[in-house]
Length: 428
Length: 173
Image (cartoon, rainbow over all chains, first blue to last red; front, top):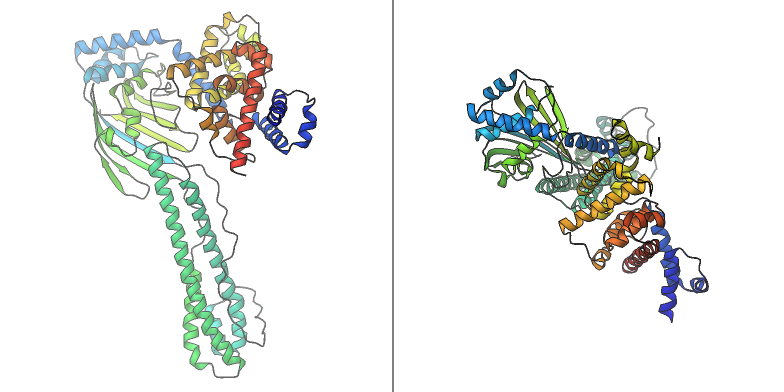
């Protein structure tokens, strides 16, 4: 009976119906009330689901308009392409042939399709490949630790001497002079106030750096990479943050030791002063310890904005053939280290494959361009032509010198912070 | 200009198509994203839907609103893609085994995963009615089922989702 009344109540709630006899059950059943709460939350949240990025609306509108225009002119392109290919085959491969063929009519014909046809006809186009890829994973700004990492307090005399009021900063030499003078208790009060305070501030800053770096590293560790590029970037950023944490830890340990040592020595000075004993034997050690502590505090690096992105660069030369692409180049990591790659298949970042995975890809890109007589043509590459995890849309820009392709640049931006720019420059 | 008026001048007015896209792309992309689970595929499906709407504008009979008509094209486009890709739909149980917060700021992310795990009929019903705000009758027209079937599908989706959230709350109190 119980199961049935639960089901009946929830069924009515899901249908948005008025509860009848179930209303009584709902009042007495905590489980169904919790279930109703979950349903309310779902209904309240529903209208926020599956929202595309707010700033992508106009981009998407333009994308559809471009695709619409591109589909309205395929017949023209095919005619130009096949005519160009036929003539190129007749007169032999080369940019000069195409330039002569089309030089008389340099306006508004499909020059990039002509260039694609030239590639097809020549089988052996040398090119330079350049790529820059930046991965900026999306994760929250880590809250630094709120706990203070307290240093040992600097001692004072029992006389409870008040520190000297000062308008500006304090020189360590001045404090040491005071320590060596006739009133060490006043000097100790000043040291506690000024050196102790700044040392504590430095320790707090290091502790905050340390905890923020750890929290950032934890967030990065929880991210899932969808490509070799992202994987290597996450590894690099994780290592960077762990190094930052370890560096702050080391600095904090050194600072703590110096503060403890100085406090011990100054405690001896305070004890001697309290008991009217000579402090001379302690002066040298106290001065040295104090100078060392002040130097450490001065050298404590100010907190910096942690690195939240990784940029990679690739440079290679290659040859485009009908059936294959050879490419030989170097990848430079964000830390400056380099790796060689000798084929699209062993490119550590997988970026070459995105654009030059097959010989047809670059031809498809060129053939997808709109007609233009300008020196630069920019368009959105049709979906599916290029494939890279996370990047749904690639924008292409071809720079032309007359009928000659000076370079083809492809830009891809993934919603989660991966930006890739790849340029292919054919040999002149 | 109303949607119907825009549709009537599509072939002679470049800006009309742009305006129509501007008005409806966001909602169509939400529907496609919920069904295809991949933003690239979803945006492509919406693009194809809008281009198909342009080509077939003259076939619009006015039985339903332009908005419903566009979403119906989009729905069919997504279904076709699902079938063509033979996507392995995540069984409900495994989608529901996702751990996540039963409330709070992460609930939308969890809910999107849970919606993606619903049977496709219930998924579309929930998205059309509860996410995009179509009436059950309009949603029934879009999907091509009787209104009562749509009512049942919406309710079933809500039941499954609330059960899933309740289960997670039990495991991760």
